Every structure is written in structure tokens, then in C-alpha cells.
Image 1 (cartoon, helix red, strand yellow):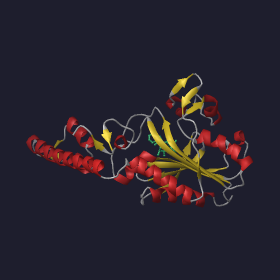
Image 2 (image 1 turned 90 degrees about the vertical axis):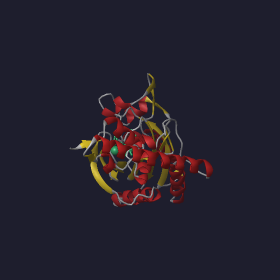
Image 3 (image 1 turned 60 degrees about the vertical axis):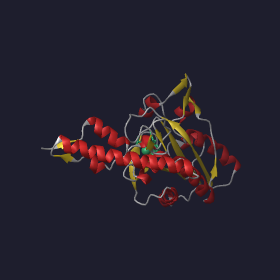
Image 4 (image 1 turned 30 degrees about the vertical axis):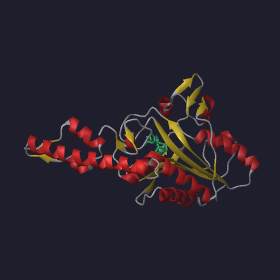
Amino acid sequence: MNISFSKVQKQRLRELNAPADFQEKSFSSAQDRDEAFRNIEQLLVRQGKQHLLEVRNVRHRPALCELEAKLIDVLIGNGFFQVITPIILAKGLLAKMSITPEQPLFKQVFWVSDDKCLRPMLAPNLYYLLAEFTRLYDKPIRAFEVGPCFRKDSKGGHHLNEFTMLNLVELGSPEEGGRQRLEELAAIVMDAAEIKDYQLTSTCSEVYGETIDVIAGLEVGSGVIGPNALDSQWGWGDPWVGIGFGLERLVMVNKGYQNIQRVGRALMYFDGVRLNI
Ligand code: ATP
Ligand code: MG
């Protein structure tokens, strides 16, 4: 007989982050299966409680906050400066990014009023600021923002409605070396996130045309080499490179978690541990 875990058992195993191959195991009887389930559940609950104790007893911040702090340090060390921009975004700025009602991303936007939304990405604000900075600073201009973004994304193991984006941009990169610079910038972030195994792959994006995604089993970032069709709207034509990373996805990959809910802002989890244990 080939008996696999029940739906309820699978759900619980996922919550407790049981190894993926264990979740797919099959058994010769329901009794064997239930016993294996009980054993691993007990073990994972014990481990979760142990982690919660450690969190209380040692100086500790959630992994997502640790990574954010580390990335800020590393980027500043690499000549970038940090900006913080409004989370509430004007509809007009979205339109300027070509995110209009025909665009799939538009349907994922949370509106707070007729003409204001929660930002689904950091790029519109960064474009806006860079247009100002080009008047005020010599190039290259290296800026980054890290903070919350919101999308009505289909639920699943890789998407959250609210997540943390890091967007870094270098305006005035050498014209020829865009790809190389993008690789260098991706490496700075991936090193800080302690992820060694990743590739850059070209894909197509509705907003930017070509993007170069950073893939570490799943997409953790999307990069662009400019100039690009959008730039003229903002009044510049310099070469630039930029990448947007999802911090929860970086933590998820680094920790080997199967679902992103463990990492993000949550009431069900604390620092990766399911609380109903
Ligand atoms: P996907 O195709 O996986 O939905 P995307 O290409 O729409 O992602 P981008 O617009 O490229 O996402 O955003 C940059 C990065 O932000 C992504 O590479 C990902 O790491 C992260 N990200 C995007 N949407 C979400 C989300 N809903 N939850 C968590 N992280 C996200
Ligand atoms: Mg992408």
C-alpha cells in the first residue's frame, strides 16, 4: 500500500518546516504513517520551543531585521546612500512607471483613496528622487531604499501581501559595463544575505522590457540595465543599473524555509517559529 500524509498532516508539516522529502513520504499502513507524523511533529515542536527560548535569552532580532540592518551597512560601505520615501504613493507616479489599468501589476495595487495607493514597488519614488539628484550631485549617484511594499499577490509559498523590498540604483555607470556592474551589485547583496548558489537570467517584464532576474531556486531579485524606455519621462538618458530584491525571499532561501509566511510580518509565526506549538 502507498499511503501518504493526509491534507491536514501535510499542512501541519509545512507549518513546522518539516523537510520537503519527508512530506512526500509514503507508508504501507495508516498506522505507520500516523506514528511517523506524531514523532516528527513532537521533534519539530521541541525544536521550535527551543528556538523561542533562545530568542528570549540572547540578544536577538528577527532574521528579516538583521538582514535589513546588515544590507544597509554593506551598501553604505560600498558608496551608496540611503533614502526613505513615502509608503503612500500617488496614482500619477504609478502611471509614469507605465503601471496603468491594462497592466497586470495595476490589479495588485491596494488603493487607499481614488488617487492614492500603498506602493507596490520602490521604483517610482526612486525615479522621482534621482531626477532631482541629477541636478544636485555629480555622477555616479548611488542610492538605495529598503522598506515595505504591498501587492495583492496570489497566495502561495513565495508571495506576501506586504513584503520588504530593497531597491538599489546606480546612475551614471559606465556605458559599456552595465551587465558587469549589475553582477557586482547583485554579488554585494547575495554575499550579505549569505547565499552562494544563484544565477542571473534574462526575462521580460511588462514594466521595464528586459529584466535580469537573480534566481536562487526562486526569483529573489529583478535587475534592469538602463537607459530604458521609461527614462525620458523622468528627464534623463544616462546609463544606470538597478536591482530590486525581496528581503523575505532572501531570508527564506538562506534559512531553507519552504514558505515565505515564516519570514514576513506575521501573527502566526515569530522569527520563523509557528506559534501554535
Ligand atoms: P514574482 O514574479 O515572483 O511575483 P515579480 O517579478 O513580480 O515577482 P518584482 O516586481 O521583480 O517581482 O519585485 C522585485 C522582488 O521583490 C522580487 O524579485 C521578489 O524578491 C520580491 N517580491 C515581489 N513581489 C513579492 C511578494 N508579493 N511577496 C514577497 N516578495 C515579493
Ligand atoms: Mg521580477
